[in-house]
Length: 98
Image (cartoon, rainbow, N blue to C red; front, side, top):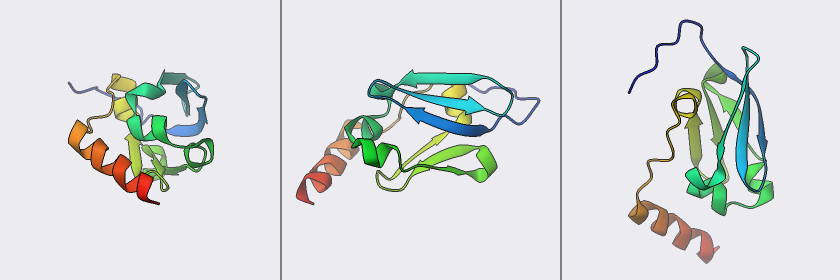
């Protein structure tokens, strides 16, 4: 599925609760999604979740502590994480070793 975007929609702020992620957009809208859609964010600590940076001039968000990236386009399309169970399992195992 592809979304036609006439105006370049960019992230301007991110708010993360225990249950959801909300993104303020440069066109005045805010969108949110359940945190459970993004397992690395879900399993991250509050400190790790709040250590984010806007990347690509607003096209995405990066969490360096969690090695997670989300694009505004995917959020607008309502796409959850595409990480497979095997990859998540390896990531969780590495987290538990530190």
